Length: 260
Image (cartoon, rainbow, N blue to C red):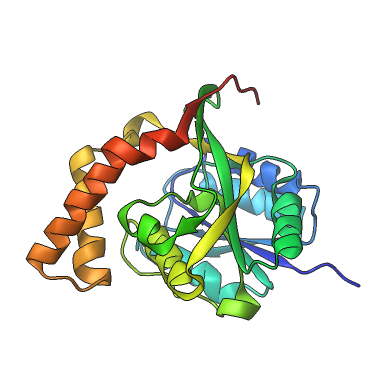
């Protein structure tokens, strides 16, 4: 029996420094039945040339280019429309997967009859050096917990498109992944992560908390727009969100001795 196809959704914009390594981390997977769908958002550097070179040597890599810069949400949505796999996975153009990422997650989903899962992940700096920081999550993540904190790293999520259908990606530029996970958990009530680190999240200098104020603004928008809460309701939710970030979430961030 042929293994199910995994469609990997990757938006890119001016990622010439990182995209080759990201693609290589997909090609290094022990699970090889995948398609990598990259949608470039009008890069002005050598990103497209690098992707084209890889795609010319691997038919599983597909490149699509937007006609104008439209943001990550539109790029992900465009890639999703092209996806043909049973499973939908996400990987941003500067992040990396560990070689057994897909295999372990798909085995975990099958063994536990799960239509969705994610995993822990490690943090690296701009040049790929380990920051000795691992981001974990509750082992039984509820919708309510996710409502006040996005515990799910975008680079780790996988869902079964036969179960959910293709979940629409919001067209906003930030926090689309959080809204997508909320849509999933609203249907299944809770999620289980693979309890180990399967990916590397790159923290770049120009995006380190690129600013805390921006983060608050984007999260407030999720509560007011996606959840359609009024000013008072959205404000109360933001207080709960900030409490979670400052008091609860640090329990799931661990100092480790990591190597790549």
